[in-house]
Length: 185
Image 1 (tube, rainbow, N blue to C red):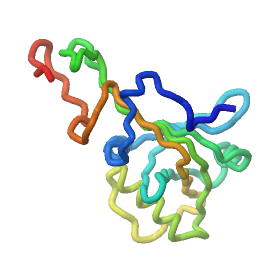
Image 2: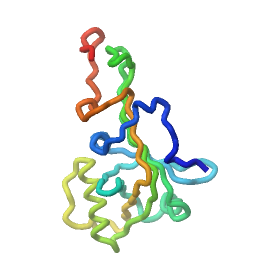
Image 3: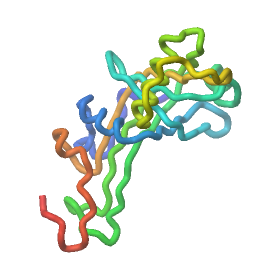
Image 4: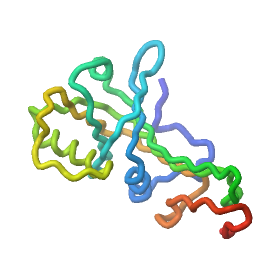
């Protein structure tokens, strides 16, 4: 079995470790792809998400109170989550000699279903989701009886960029510039 804490990245110099830089990526991406254990293939699904990062990174998603996802999580709560952004510079000026650009965050953690029986955590999760998707906060729990919140508590968080970044000013991807008009870094 793989010890994910010991995995080395190809281009280790591109790893992002500062929580502030990782949060910038999370704040700008409303979709998280979640992979769950299934057989013979992993089950993956894109989901809207929100997060809080206190002692650990916690992702929140909403889902139906029944179905395949819930059954898989009951069997094995270990999940992997991928949040990424990609910019193709095809036909545009390269930046730092690169023809494309990306930022990504991968989370390995344990998922659990939060029900309305835990109203404080349920509402905390839904409001994290609202914040990250640009919706106004909720003051009370919605009446939908088939709604659950999936809470993923991160055990491992990794992040990477197309080229090494050192501070928050380097995290935003430079805009696409017509060929020949891009400033040289």
